Image (cartoon, rainbow, N blue to C red):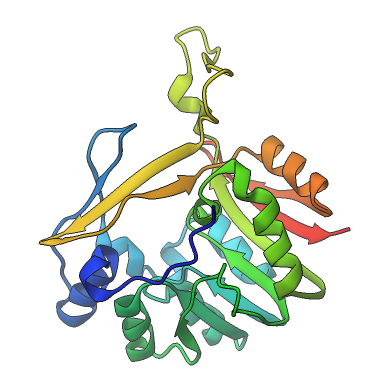
Length: 244
């Protein structure tokens, strides 16, 4: 089941961290919990990076984005601001109310608190950008058909999606270079996360990391073509998805 909810401020840890950093230039620890991994944290400063300091995959996606652009899960608005600076037309959306306020304060011209999968959300976009492991919001593999159905509703004729993700198979690499993955278990890229910032704790949510071969399979099953645009140095990649 796809998440169609919006966050409230009391359940918005990432938004609270983004708001603090925007206000004072510093933030406390944005903690990340998972049933599959040890506790981690997100460096809030990286959510405010300039285009020059973005990973090359993101820089490539920004250059390729054309026409009317939808920036999904826009966070602090760093991608949208870079697109605006290049003279491009962008609509930034996020489910975080605090992040949307920060985007507006930072000068993002069109930022709204919107859930991509809301039945009420519609439009005709030439480019949909899903960056910073943008596949994550799909949640689980079983949601891929619903995701592609939504993309058909949102894309203008000839439009495309630029999505980056990572193949988590490296977590299962053996000393001899082989990979020990239990195929009887759930897909290894399905992860659950929960975030906390100071005393603001969010709900547990599903997040999907998808390898390119699996993405290509689901794209083909749902009337799309997946093209590998660029690969990073650590199993991450940028893909273009377009209707056939």
